[in-house]
Image (tube, rainbow, N blue to C red; front, side):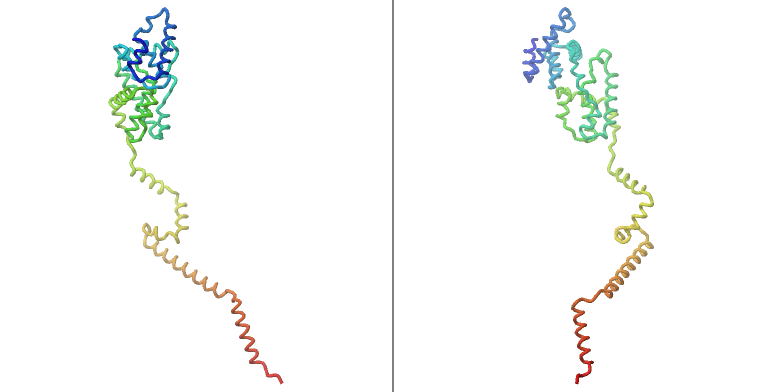
Length: 295
């Protein structure tokens, strides 16, 4: 099928993608002159369209592409894409490297790094054992699709909210393909996903209490000595009766000492100006009454 006809039948492709696919197809025909059997003629347009979508980072559906082009196997279509990519020296999938650790940091859940990495390794191992040797080479685990899908499944398991639409855009694949990979991860890695245990709030409270109990005794004694007069009412519930009596005696003695200091301060205060004037008038009046009469 012609590339333009295949693009029209697929639908939704941008003019940039169609132009890039036509460019790839022309380069492919030039480089395989004399070796036309390297890539099947009917499979070239679909492979060039897929490579153009990957290069321009636009979503695509591989299954729909190979079916519309008349292909019989998705594995053969993927193999054709890799052959064309190597001939054109594109290696579009290898230009973008996505790791599970980077995803955990980007979406604000670094605590899930080890959990996501373990599920990712388990998924790759189970896929290799499940697929036949002839099909193992058709699955490219370096695509961003697989680590992003694993991260999405693990985030859902840990009740961590992530933007699914943003993750699908980062995979540069079709939402249906993303959903298919997610379902396969949930089916194959059920034991790894079930091994995740989220810490509850009670364990966090116990940890905080242990930190308080492990405080050095010197700091506790200093804190109690400095706050005996101000925080006695708040800490009395955890002290013995003798300690409470001692605190009451200390409070009463401090109150009495403060009262005595106020009385001494009042006795030692200097007289005011009005009191001095009154005292002076009384002294002068007394001197006049006691003075002898003048002849």
